[in-house]
Image 1 (cartoon, rainbow, N blue to C red):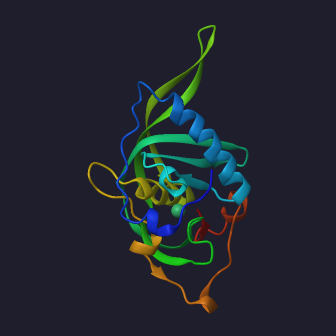
Image 2: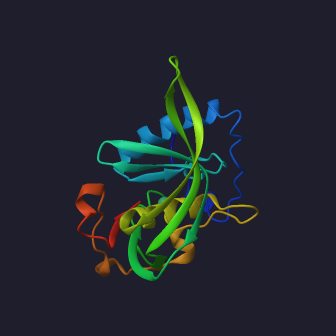
Length: 184
Ligand SMILES: [Zn+2]
């Protein structure tokens, strides 16, 4: 699994994941988590690796990734300015405007003990703020929704001049106190 060129993800159309038959996507998600961790990112979406499905993986704690299928988000409150990077544009950083708070609606696999271990895909509705709200918006935009194409920070942001870059911030723990410097 490798990152594809950025022009392969700009305006890409992604299909919903079929939640009744997501075994293949779960295996892909595992590889995406591995690649994301290797690259030092905090999230990566399927189109970035050439898979045009509405899914992404992201770090939800210092040691844990979450798999997200068919995400949507709904703004809740005011907007903030961010500076973000993206694994698909490793040399660049962008200014963006984001919602400070969102409600994310998505599906995620969870392990269920019945007593046999099985994976079930559950619908989740969660309110996100701060860095998690920013990452969720960034990754959800990569995969679009309905017939809306995936979009990237290069399309919706304003590129920073080389001498204005804040430096690539790769680990979530480092940017808890540095909300505006995000590598996603
Ligand atoms: Zn990205």
